[in-house]
Image (tube, rainbow, N blue to C red; front, side):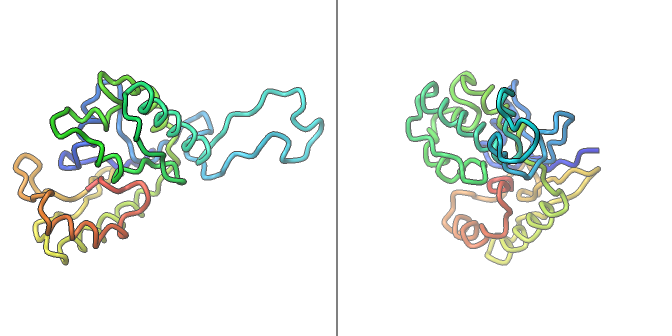
Length: 212
């Protein structure tokens, strides 16, 4: 059974925008599948790197897998966002393949509808984003939970007393943050909140930034 790290309703605007996009399913999670490409931590080798009869000559080039495929798919999405969505400064993904949300946040139009988070206007790059998300390497839900728990504790220790812990339910990790999603109590734009986030940023594992 797959274990997922699932965004809570209180996750940032980009998370809500992705969930709301009809063609997307956000899953910062164990992507497990039957195709063998998802969930691998190996970087793809070039054809012919390994020995064997006949090498790779005359054979179809194998598809990239694992982190290599994830990074390549994210780059395809980024190029689409630059060319088709009109965001020429859309940042490259990190070497891990995860998008650089802090830089993407800086491009967001406050009067818009979060298109920068969900594949551009009318989801012009949504297929590329969905393809990249489907290739995200497998995650360890327990480690994700422990990381978000440490982050939540750090946020409280740095003055954001109402920051709630994440929870585990049915194998799913639900990020913390707002205790009541329908009645937000934290001012995420306040200097105090931003200072706490900066102080606690290193508590979150790669790929969890912005999840709570």
